[in-house]
Image 1 (tube, rainbow, N blue to C red):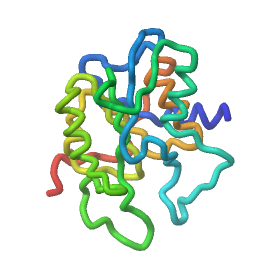
Image 2 (cartoon, helix red, strand yellow):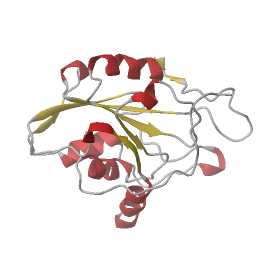
Image 3 (cartoon, one colour):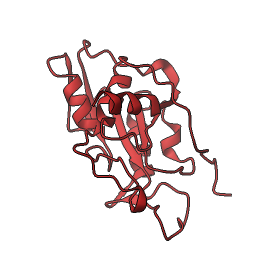
Image 4 (cartoon, rainbow, N blue to C red):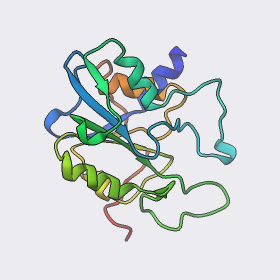
Amino acid sequence: KTLALQAARESLVLAKNTGNILPLNKATSQRIAIVGPYATNCRNDGGGSGSLTGPYCINITQGITSKIAGSATTIVSDWTTADTVFIVVGINDLGEGFDRTNVDLPVVDGVNQNALVAQVMASKPNRTVVVYTGGSAAVAGSWSTAPAILIALYPGQEQGNAMADVIFGDYNPGGRLSISFPNTAS
C-alpha cells in the first residue's frame, strides 16, 4: 500500500494552477463537488495486455471523502452550490487492435466531457479543477481552459488517496508528462 501510494503521488502532474486554486485547506469551511464520467471510476489500466486487476482501487471521490473526514470541508452533490468543482474527465477510446478515430475528448456514458467543462466553467470560471485521466492525450478543448489541471493518467490502486494528498497540500506533485497534448488535431 505504501509503495502504491508513493508511485501514484509521483506520477501526478499539476499542469496548471492559475490563481493558486490548489492546494485547498480542508480546515476552511467550503463545499466541493466532484463530477464527470470518471468521478467514481478507478482508472488504473487501459485494458488488453495492460489490464490490471488489483486487490483494491480507490477513486478520487473515495480519496477526497477519506481526506476530509471530520474537517470543515464538505462534498456536495449539486455542483452549482459548490465553492470549488473538480471535473474528472479522460479518454476511453484506446486499446490494442484498433486506432483511435480522433484525438478529441470522447463522449462517455452520454456525457459530452468538453460541454460539461464549458458549462461548469461558465458558472465557476475561477474555481474549476479538471482532473484528466486515461492512457493518452486528447486535443485541447474546454477541459484545457480550466484554471487548474491535474494530470493523472493511470496512477494505480492508490490514485484517489494520492490525488487527495495533492489537492489538500499534503504532497507537492512533481511528475512529468510522458505524452504531449496537441492544441489541434492537425
